[in-house]
Each structure stands twice: as structure tokens, then as C-alpha cells.
Length: 345
Image 1 (tube, rainbow, N blue to C red):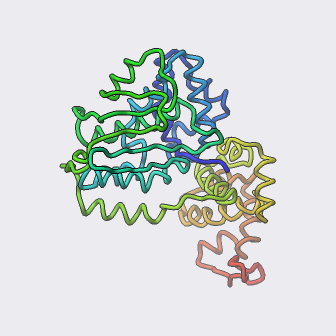
Image 2 (cartoon, helix red, strand yellow):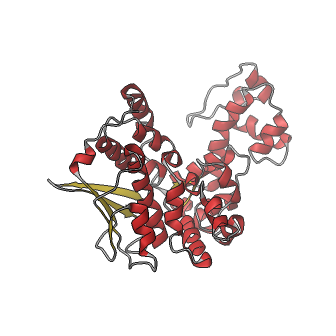
Image 3 (cartoon, one colour):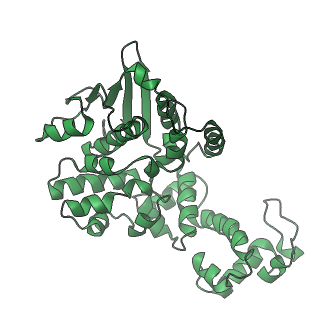
């Protein structure tokens, strides 16, 4: 199953890539990542494609700390709604717990374990993938981001007790010590940040309990990310339709697979790409035609129809009336499956 991450994870990539002598767009083309995701931070992309991009960028630039540089330039804003709810918690401990609970909304292959004892709190990172452990640059980016988030809640003077990394030491260990400001253990049994129990009790002065409660209710409504191929294709289609660039080839790019893979998995689930596209078009077209000032030709183009006339035929077959009739309030009786009957038009 393809894990997805919000493309906000790439927000700082162009800046870091250029700083080490790379052309960010050329590198993205090499791993077949759509270039337009740089301008759309909520677009889902395949975690595997992001990992390939980071590893290739580190290899071609010679920057061992490429993932760490991304983490250094990032922050809570990269995590969207998850970052907002973390910022509004009353204590650092509650913020870390909230981040652990809601991080799958941003990255559905990422998990945190919070292990407490009398002297130490261990935040252990897990990144799901086909390998026993995730590639080095992905670990650096993820664990480094967690460090930066905690540091932002404290202020820049905070340092963890210790950091564990499962991979062998780099040539420049000092770079890692400077970033984390503490002892680094390489070839460790896990990837983790260790801090004191007292750190978890630290109050966050900027926290607002009413905002935190509101955000929690909103984010709980979207807490469960899709787990099946059908649901993930549906999520990507919904995102791409809003941009006016949705084809099975484009969806395959976002899921880091081929169109044949998509068709095969959807057939196994008893559905098809065209059925998912049709359902999402039906949801979106109602929103778009409610704006009388929006030209129908523009709506047709956004939804991927070859012409306005093609959309008109599809709309009548789907909803049982013309767009003009719909705008005048005509609502034919629905068929058993929820689609208005054409005979009632």
C-alpha cells in the first residue's frame, strides 16, 4: 500500500536544493514528482517518491545532512492543521501527545511512541516502508522536524538529553551535535529523542484552550486517513480535480506507481478509476455551477471534459436535468443509488 504525505513536506526543498548546487525541478523530474505540488501544500504525494528525492539529492550534492537541512528550515507551519493544534496545547507534553495522535493526517506512514520512566521520556520515531528501517535522509528530516517543533515550544535555548539514530555515523558528526545540541548515539537500536519528564510539564505561554478545543473537534473529523487503494485514489482525485489537472496518469504520479497498477487494484476492489472520477466530478460540479458568474466552459475544463457540450451531456445523464434547469432549482427525484433519475427531468 502506498503511504501518502502532504506535499507541504517539500516546502523548503527548492531552497535547500539550490543551496547545495542542485536544480530542484530537475531533481523532482528524476523521481517523477509533479512539479505543481510545490505550489499546493495540501496535495497528497507518495512517501516513496519523497524518500527517493531526498536520497538522490543527498547523493548528487554530497550533502550528508540534506534531510537535516530541510528540518532546520521547517517548522509547525509545514504540518498544516496538525501544527496548529500542537501550538495551542497547554504544555509541551500535551503538545507532543497531540502531535503523536494526529501526525497520520499529515503523513500516514509516520508513528511516534512516547515512552516514560522516572528519569527520561523517549519519543521514538517509526517510518513505515518496505525496508526494515526508513532511509537515512527521511529519518533526519522527520526526527529533525520533531526536534525543531519541541524547540519552538520552549525557545531556542532548549536541548534534549540525547538523540539516537539507527544508522552509522556520518563523516561530520559535529554538524549533528550542533543541530541537536546534545550527545548523539549512532548505530542505535532506534531513532529517538530523549528528554526529561520535567520538560513535558513546561507550560506554553501562547496556548489558547478555546482555540485548542475548536481545532481538536475539527481535526478529529478528518483524523482517519484512507487505508485502501480505492480511498487513496479517491483522495488524490479530489485534490487534483480542484486544480483542473486530473488524469489517471497524474494520479499515478502522485501515488508513485503506474496507471496499470491503479486499474488492477481498483478492479480488485470492485470499482474503477472512471467511477471514482465520475463521483468526484458530481460532488464538485454542484459547487461550481452554484456560482452563476463562473463560465461553464471554465468548469468543463477544470473537470477534465473535452468541451462544454461533453459536460452538458454528462450532467444530464448524471442528474436528470440540464445545468440551466438545476440553477433554476429543478431537482429530479433520485434513483435508488442516489443519482437523480433522467426520466424525471
